[in-house]
Image 1 (cartoon, rainbow, N blue to C red):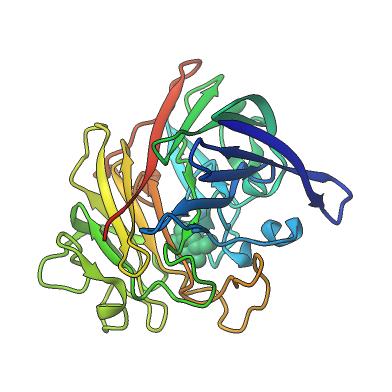
Image 2 (spheres, helix red, strand yellow):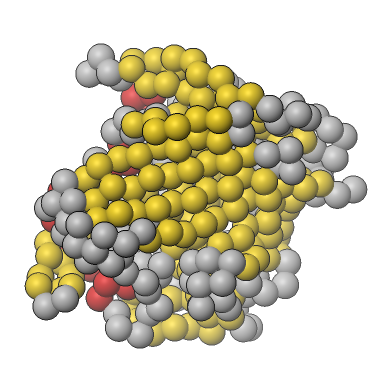
Length: 351
Ligand code: BGC
């Protein structure tokens, strides 16, 4: 096991971005970057033991700082996903967050994901990043510190532990926005990937993809992944919760609502034999297939490109806009008490 630091490059501002590569005893590795405490690359074996990178990303750090390129591998906060009208009332007070998309807030609305995080600690198989967000940053309450600990061991499990400490009660919805492509091929979409999601319901949305507060039943619809299905089989079906041509970009309500740490989803790709299990203690997961990524985009990592449906994000989270829906399961941050949530991506092979 080892954790090795290198310079990734410089941002236009001149600021340096660093990479930390954790390699396990079998040669599999994860590389984390200071920019957005992000997952830069993840090399895991296929059924023949061949290591390939299974996440999308860029060779140049500046691309990561543009929200239009989809938050590739970045940690998202303070509140992942959407907040209707960029406002919510918490403990009797109204807060206003940036309307960085249409009339709503997406992914915290500010620069939370797009700055260099501090490195608190590293070890042979782990790294801890931290970011301080002052009271009122992007409209959110409290002096807020988020730490993200990544552990990658010889079991090929990527463990992500988010912890938040704040000087007052506040809201937090951290996630990681990695786009996975288990084929390890640089020109394949994820339509051939098979997916299972442990959820009977999804959050119904309006035409702007904002939750209406209703939960829709997956049964009998293209949304049903309770048994494994190829993503591409139904992605273009006309369905009320799908934006035409974009495909899946929906929050699933996991069966696990009580904060237990359980299996949320399984993604697999037949040719490589790679399987990724997602475990979390959070109640929701956003299935997003990169439908908003531009078809002709030419930037990426090596020969791979960050384009339309090239990667699938499985963003563990509280349901989008939970701050505005009393019926959505959510856990808030208590003043001076550690708030903690864990997600794991477990890699295996079959075949
Ligand atoms: C959202 C998408 C968005 C993407 C990149 C996902 O979490 O649901 O609508 O395009 O993030 O920002």
